[in-house]
Image (cartoon, rainbow, N blue to C red; front, top):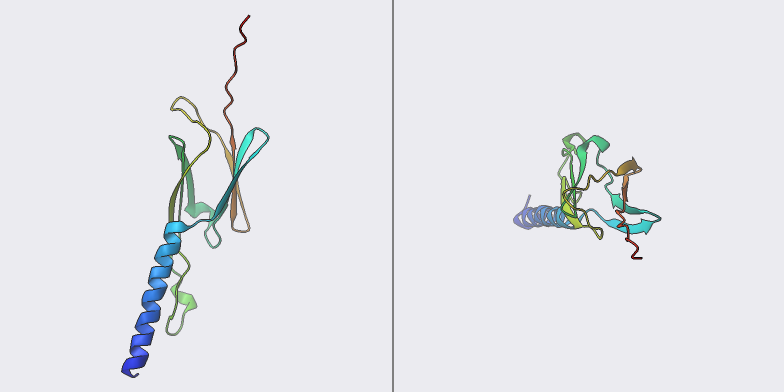
Length: 130
């Protein structure tokens, strides 16, 4: 292998590492909307196993974490580019108020690489004044 080929290979490897680091920082893509009395959050996590995904809510922040192992068995030759993230750790502020006294009970499903999280929106009762 010549020096030029070696440099090109190293450049592609470094580009792949930086690209993967970037995606680990910005991912996962998500949508958030109200549906009746629930806040619905769709989280794209393709390639992660359901048991390797963790969702937590604390102080109005949703923490999303996921981890997978690099699959070395799929590459039998030189690896030129690796962009798929191995770790996800993202914190998302929620548009609903959650206090320490509130016990937030939501439900989540994982189908085709998408987590659908439904969180009941706490409603405050207004007190009528007579």
